[in-house]
Length: 303
Length: 303
Image (cartoon, rainbow over the protein chains, first blue to last red):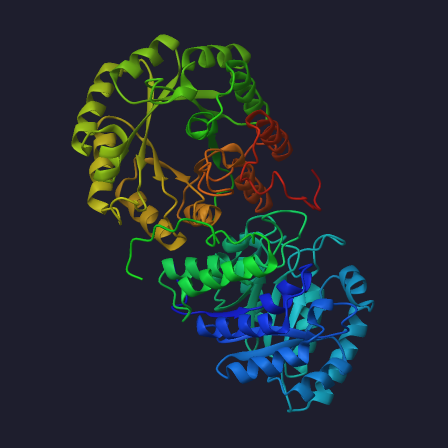
């Protein structure tokens, strides 16, 4: 079984997770969250989004969060989601090193999410890339790669269309996102293997949700297909508030634990993640779906 | 990715799951449970145990359950756990087709569980096999194959010692059990591959627990190592009553769903399993850990 010896974990909880939480954390708590992620060994964090605060109230304080996080710690690579040129301007002004853009491979989901067709989104992406020049690093996500609740199976041709536009515009860090948690491990292995063979210049990450309990299994399948970069949320943050234990991103601590157990290096301290996850549960006043936050971990190897 | 086209699922919830539940189901409910498992397409079920009812109060009615289940349905292969010759006598008298015996690969766990050394348990196994002759089919489990909370890592030599005793006594259906839920997928793949190569006559099944959330991932690793037989419990029955969502067997419906999604045939109707799992939650008056019992399943293929 050929698995990578080390992997990159990119924490997206502060952005992708928190935006779905009802409770708005204070700016100070968000900055503390980011600094403790860095202390736990995370090297890359999606910290916030520069989008309309009426659409995403949780991120009303994006500038202050970025400023505070940078003051607290300059080791971690902070990025922020943007949706258009206004977001890019804000990100440039806030001096973040990296922005993330996203287009959905499901036409219906893209329309529901940003009220644009995929082609319109790609046109906007080109404008963002032109405007960004070399002033900021850009990474990109493709949503609904493994299936969509609105549309059913996702067409490979659409995934490739978006991928090629990303690559043409110089974006090589690309996350394949199972936004609805519809993937199965055979599908992940086969699709990732195909895409890696077709696009050797792309550096793919996987971003899996645990809706149907297959999140870790899909990550294991991705590892076998050569993926060594994964996005996740501490505690599985971002789970649907009406379904306990369901629907969020794969919990970072559960994923890191699995990597640890397999001897795959992450540079992350599992114990620190668990403490931080419990702190987060306190701040949000709710139980998070992460398994290892609550499990009595009987590890019998040295810590 | 080479996976089997079909797999055997053996439901152990009525035995392994229920024995840990505080609430004692009525004999009628147990018989209904078994008949509905058969209706859902299960071909093999561990129905009860012929052990001392003071040790396992839930199975006080083993004879009545077996009798009722056989009257209700003769399609399903009913088996029962036994721990000694007295159990074998009861199983023979009750006319079950198959008994299951278990020995732990952890000396300390075996002592705690049955107050015998592994060698004493193997001596008793030989007595059971001699006494059984060809009157009843025997299958066997090895507990704590992938690690033990009392003892740490399990020695391969102990697993092989037990395996060889099983094979010498004519037992070829052997379940490798991750009793504590300590396995990781790389370990599962490597160990199963090794054991299958060493013991080509053994027909291995995997019996995984989901303590650390890696149950399905370990099953996926087992599939890749050539395993096509799996034991699980409806709803993840048998989870520790003090840790919500944790520690039980892998939920049968979650496992069947994963197989379905990968196009691996089980002969089992997923929808019927979910209905039965919800019935079981009602009878036990508790939420079971199974993910798909509670998930809003947006499947976009034909049912």
